[in-house]
Length: 418
Image (cartoon, rainbow, N blue to C red; front, side, top):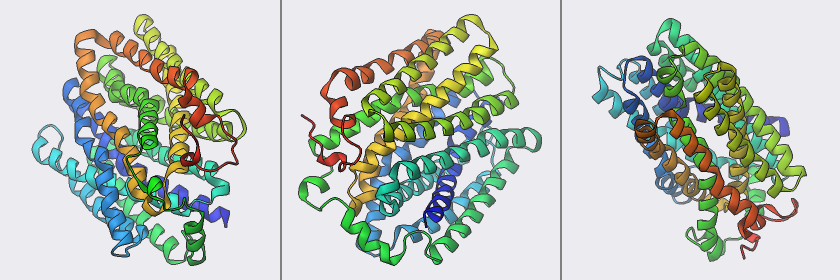
């Protein structure tokens, strides 16, 4: 049965990652090669603000689940179908010439993509066996990043030869096929069998008002921790493609191979390493090492700006992507252990909304930093962003509250934050 879970989580990860990366990083690359300005390419992240509204989508899907008795699985299939059709239609418009209708469709697509992510988060909390949380979390994260590899590496090369329109049509078709595959998996009961539903309910946190309450003190503490763990990655990711394509005049194929190809593979390796480290070693020390790796990545980017040695840039990309994989798995583990299963989509969405908000707002912020201080100032600021969270994890009680505990104990909601 465990193999079925692995197969299911791989499909779920890919079907969530394909539209997300297509409508964010791939669109940004399309704008960059279509002679759009750096400010336009950087500001396009504002259109991913629907990901920051995950709490709203979480409330909607939980209303369908708890009140209308429409399971996450069926809601997921409907939204995937709608999203596939929209991506296919989007392929007929150019991001610069037809920017008005293109941006409108992009916003709607991001709303649907954010809804898919929200449903996937809730579904994973419900069906993940507690004994295999870290491994299945790493599997989902790796599959999600594999979708990044499919779009941003193989897809970029495909777009270079056959055009961006064909890339969007191909991804739309692939998403529709994955939807059919998931329908078959759900139909034959590979997702969550009926006899597992009572177990999922019994293993969830008890439905006390303290745990269900979204805005408790500990909830805000988790929210702050997750946001600070993520903000270095989203700040770097906001302009790293324009930096390579427009700032350094590199080819699309070079970006596809190093940033989106080997970088994604390194990211997947980072997820697996994080899963192992969080299971078998002191979590506070492990997370401290993760943050150190993020700092090293920023220092390597600074070294490249000063030296212009291509090898230094390639190394910086791999180190940064490896650190991203480490931190992403850490964040998923924190949230997965904290969420109440009855309100899985809403609570998970509440935490991830802050991350998505940072991702959306980091583009314009990074663009203005680059405009006034250049690429050197941009990467120096990215290095400085690691320091506050490193101080909190290493020197304050937050690190002790969330990372210094035995792995066999209960969820984070049962850990004192004093």
